[in-house]
Length: 78
Image 1 (cartoon, rainbow, N blue to C red):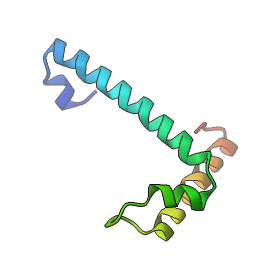
Image 2: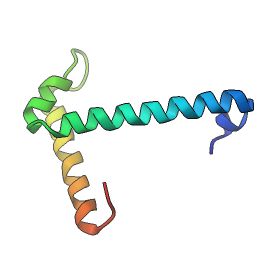
Image 3: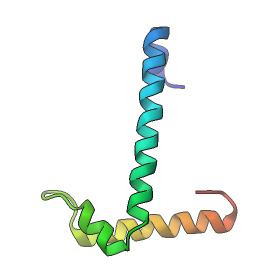
Image 4: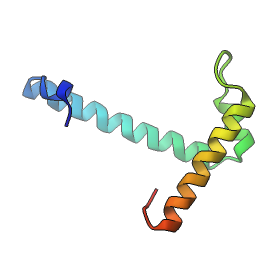
């Protein structure tokens, strides 16, 4: 899997695997929420001062959606 994970004890690997599973679930929920909103609203909600601008976030979200749509059309899944 990874050198880091492989360096852990079996007990630590179980904790690491559980944490990765939980993070993946949270990321899926966050992306689902983001993708359920209009692009501009999703960008406004994602904006944090000091980070990318709303305009940059809008373009990034739009790009992610176009890539996901292209994968679905190509039959590769999301």
